Image 1 (cartoon, one colour):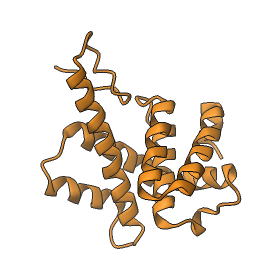
Image 2 (image 1 turned 60 degrees about the vertical axis):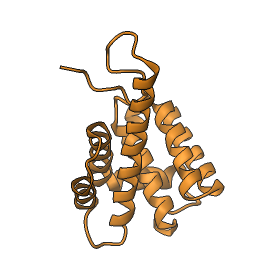
Image 3 (image 1 turned 60 degrees about the horizontal axis):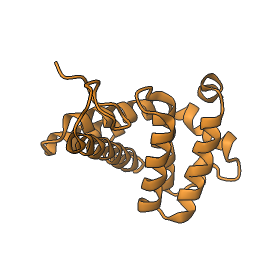
Image 4 (image 1 turned 135 degrees about the horizontal axis):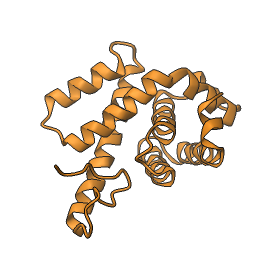
Length: 165
């Protein structure tokens, strides 16, 4: 049985993984983050839950199982911990109330915080770098700076303090 790849793309526990395998794993994890973001964003419109949206997306495509696994993990973290995540965002950046953020920015922050706090397989620094890049791509430089600031503050807090609001 092949071990699952690590979230940081450094292989799945086998020594000396090839560069092509590593690049493929990184692509899978990035795709998983984009899938989760898409599902959480679409759920903002209130027609379906993020979980239902994600499962629909996964059923419509012959997706990568590694990407699907990470996407499910992030969506589950966001849906199960949304109130805690929102409170943490507001405590960390009180000048940006979650309800007043653009839907994309809100979805980006929720997914990012969900992964940083609830994905032990993903090193915090990797998750932060990936979500900051997604914020730049999907929302722009102001969202990138907000994401970097919020996630940086959360990462500096002890794990038990971040998860509790």
